[in-house]
Amino acid sequence: MRIDLVSEHASPLAAIGGVDAGGQNVHVAALAAGLARRGHAVTVHTRREDPGQPDRVPTADGYDVAHVTAGPERVLPKDDLLRHMPEFAAVLRRTWAAAPPDIVHAHFWMSGLASVAAAGAGRAGTIPVVQTFHALGSVKRRHQGAADTSPPQRLDLERSLCRTVSHVVATCSDEVFELRRMGLDSDRASIVPCGVDTAVFTPRGPVAPRTAGRPRLLVLGRLVERKGQEDAVRALAAVPGAELVVVGGPPVDRLDADPEVRRLRAVAASVGVADRLVFTGAVARVDVPAWVRSADVVLAVPWYEPFGITPLEAMACGRPVVATAVGGLQDSVADGVTGDLVPPRDPDRLGAVLVALLADESRRAAYGAAGVRRARSRYRWARVVADTENVYRQVLASRRPVEVAR
Image (tube, rainbow, N blue to C red; front, top):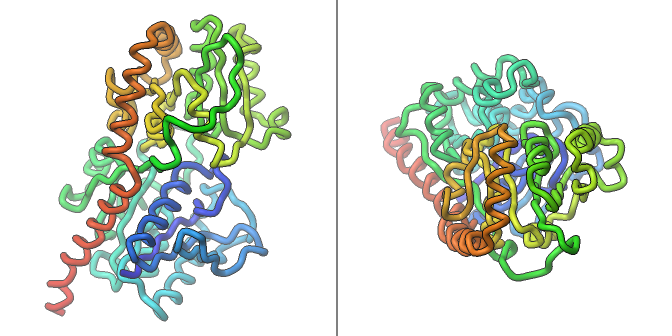
């Protein structure tokens, strides 16, 4: 099968940890590699962000990355990319006219717009388009309000995608509920979660250096306000002696100038924990498991989260998780089994849960062991890729009677 993935702002080749580089990049890279291992010809189309990027890059994992020129050849915030999607679609249309794939899988809503425009309008288009949103504008608007920088037409355009794409692959049950509210028929949605590389994220392996005598709490990911790092900092005041290690953000030599780092440090100073807050800066992807293994508890405490891969990585490494009961975290973290779920934006409750968990070594060990089993059975990439491939085959099979009738 020839499969083209479209990921307009999240290249599988990008360094993880930037403002717009995170879980979607990891997902697209792992899905492309897994599909290639299963014998498919896979190309990922992403926007060119540097004039020096070649048109096509074969990867060691067996898939190609095609750089599409659409707008300025430099990094742009993803919320500024909508105006360049017609140009992106035009390149895809020419590419697919010459060599059409069997199926297209669009990642993020703007990728969906470009893919539908290039493949042929509507579900009867020339090439079937499967959509994964990764995040929904309706949820973002609900939680961020006036701070939401998405284009104002995003919600209407996402609703239109629900009518025009062949199928939607949602990453969690909460997302399906939102999609149904947007008008998507239930028989045109499948749940396939994000995954974790259980050969890389393992309980055994290198461990990042520890601070002697201090329990370690760890948060991992992009430094954006909705990820809840401030709540973790405020909760630290209730956890005497523990340190909070924040993994991610800008390179270490740019930490002092980063606005979000400076804001979090000011919060830490105001609650008296500045000496127990540590920023690592950006770390190489290969070093992430060592940092996860160094933690006594891994926190994932966003205000909202479409899915969230940090809990999967923590569970695969045998670390207990404390997460907010939002979005996909409600699916991935088994409350009272692999970790504890807490309300979002509630530092007091978070602090109390952390104190109790750090005081109970046997419960932490039980959570860690259960997490390894859950990650390996439900979230390993081999299963995620196979389930996604099955959706593709179902979509293609459902189109064949229509094609014969034509």
